[in-house]
Length: 461
Image (cartoon, rainbow, N blue to C red):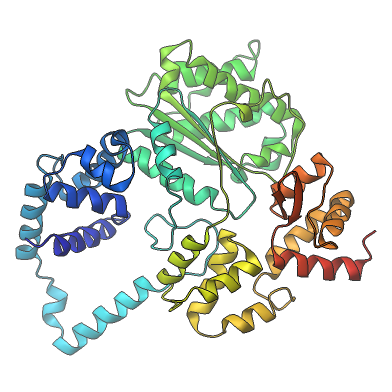
């Protein structure tokens, strides 16, 4: 059977079963299997380590394929099972609806469905797992996938807002599920304000929702002891109840942890608690089952004791802007015929490789309602596509005049500026500036144009 044809069928079946399609690394593995190559030979060809293919990429691939075809797939039986499955599917698929439709009408409907499925969505929030518009940050994903398989791992993902943190988190959780791990994914934006401001209430919320996602009864009162306190009670709850209830690793993923930064007294207790759970894995084997994923924006700050915070242990992941190559790749997925690279250079000169800004520009350009020159001409205006993004930053700067003044200083010079380290760190964490050696410059031309206009109108001093 032709491998390319089989890969197309496998991709369609994966998507049909709500799994993501094959990525380039997995296609390389499939081609290697068909040529009877070892993982070592495949790894050399792809520029990865053999361990990544053996322990991460191949098990994830085989896990998805096993769920689709209903049999356990391994490297040894992969070719035989897939060929048999595809042949069986081809023989059995006779959809009654299509048989009852006139041929011409059936073709139109298939075309309409295909067009609907492939049309880009308005880019807002995280990129869905099955989306073709997700840009992989290789080898960053591979590093994270390897880390999550290590006992007692802690991974910290940080970046300014709209840089792709939650999109990456979705894929880590999906990878953990494919490995057979139990997963708990909680977004702290869903916690009520009053709960976030009370440590005891917040820890009870955390434990109760963790049990719910594991399909366990909460049984909080069996483990909560006012004399011991909520930190010890929640620790015992995880240790003696949740971790004891599973024979597989348990991933606790906490998104938007920056929400708790706005409650310093709770943050100063909760964040060291996470670190203590990470440290427990070095002492007690049961805590080695726990894998912690902490995701937070870098735009809110809270004074923390660095010896207690979880933000100086574990694997730190900093999400950066897209490279020119990745923007070109994304433009192709939006079916923009940019061949000479000049359009990419123009776009990146204005907005850099900021993921959300790039996605939004390419989406509007793909609709054909606006040209690149028109988009760039109005990009910093109130009628531009980035108005909401820029307004959010301005609202934050209005509350912190010292940051607005520092940014104004940077924008009013064409040379890199030496800035106070604290101000530099905060503006950089917001994504408004970038470092140039020990000095800083504007994050992108969009920010320069917009904020110079705003500062001139507002009279920032």
